Length: 101
Image (cartoon, rainbow, N blue to C red):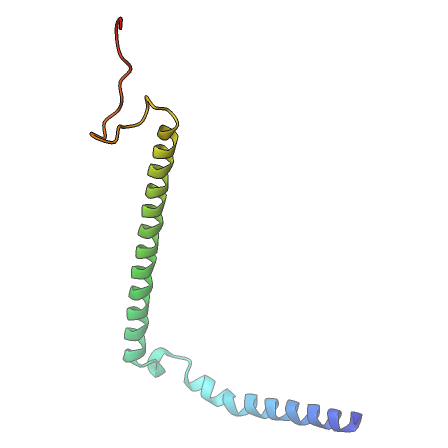
């Protein structure tokens, strides 16, 4: 059993070494930017633009959610105090009567 594992490991390492040796001339030829096609570069630019759009939309959604949460908290704080919130009819603040009653 150990012999089979050892021979399999040696064979795998031999194939990996052969692949590296065969790939060496190709890497030397592809060292410049001549092998990158223009369509690939255009695709990268389009993907970058889409990512920027999604990022902007996500940031705007977070800002809107924070604003809605802030407003809800302000309304909840005013609901406990009858003189701080608005009335149901006009939506304005309720006033404390001034002077003698």
